[in-house]
Amino acid sequence: MGIRLKVIEVEDIPAVARLIAESVRGLQVGEYSAAQREAALATVFTVDTRLVRDGGYFGAYGDSGELVGCGGWSGRRTLYGGDGQVEATEAGWLDPAVDAAKIRAIFVHPGWARQGIGGRLLRAAEAAAWAAGFRRFEMGSTLTGVALYGRSGYREIERIAVPVGSGETIEVVRMVKDGSGSGPCEGGGERS
Image (cartoon, rainbow, N blue to C red; front, side):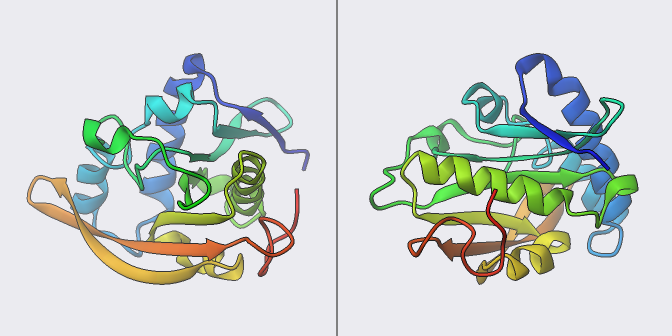
């Protein structure tokens, strides 16, 4: 399997939106109800175009050029969410000397799950944030992703009930990782 990573561009957004929907509907069945998943797809699990425009969002492409995964990082304060949910007040920039980079929106197509794509996207995001001067990482993980991130050195800080509309909430796990040792993937991950 030859997976190629590249930075997502604005013209890739429709493909990213389709991938997110397929991932949520196919891989989050055991953690969230159908009503929660569909409400989240209209609010929290939407593409964050700021993340794309900032250049920190990566696509994983299979041999025939199909988008099979996406994920990235941000130097903004936003912990999770997309255009359907992110508030303007969360748009401020972080200070790498004191703040943790935000690892954001990692999704994998159900047909490509458990083949290392999520981990590869995570390592690429960490490496890019590291190159920008960040030494700590933070994320708002879905329940589906907690095991992967735990194996990659992240630890749970808290669980948050996130309103997603239609009277529904989803549980999101705030996780952190200190990469201040020898690099961003210390503590279980591999280096890119």
